[in-house]
Amino acid sequence: KKLLTLEANEVLKQLNKVYFRTTEHPVAKNLIEKGIIYKTFDKLYDACEDFDGLYKKIAENLIEKVHLEEQVFYAVPGHPNLYDDSVKYIYDLADETIEVKAIYGASVHEVALNAIGLAITDDLLITNALDVKKHRIDYKKNSLITGVFNQFVASDLKVNLMDAYDLSHKIYYIHGAETEHERIGFIALEDLDRQRDYNHLTCFYLPKLTEKKDFSDLVA
View (spheres, rainbow, N blue to C red):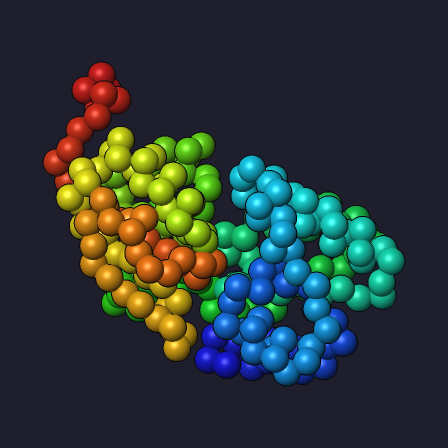
């Protein structure tokens, strides 16, 4: 409950049905236990190659649903307007006949950083794990990488980070922040894919480097 705002909690109590981006979240699991009627997009995580394709597919599906149903409630982990491109695509695809209203929620980024005693600052980069290949990590800035939902994603992420960081570089493992399953670890990069638990609430915080240089630095 502490992850929900009062408004979100009241709306959820009155719903007949909800579409969850994922049920791998304590709030979703709690609502399901209470008997809420729901559908989920969890299966699309394995069907889509990257988050961009996933989010587009979800948005297209929901726009189709809203034309068939009087009202559609779509629930995402955290704040819908912060770093959730499925919501961005919903705004893009909605025509003048569709009203989109966002209800505030505590973001994954806020609770993850709070769990390790840090604040969101200008030198923080927030990236989805599946997007690291497309968006080069800037090691001169602190990075929060979200969406490390299984060990395969974690292993792929580690390989991509090894270009910029030494395997001994210390990072934070943040799992289930602000939930009863919270686990925090200060680990070496080489152990990124050796943790016991991974799900949609698993993040890694990478403190910035101050000395290492890459080729682009040398030719700048």
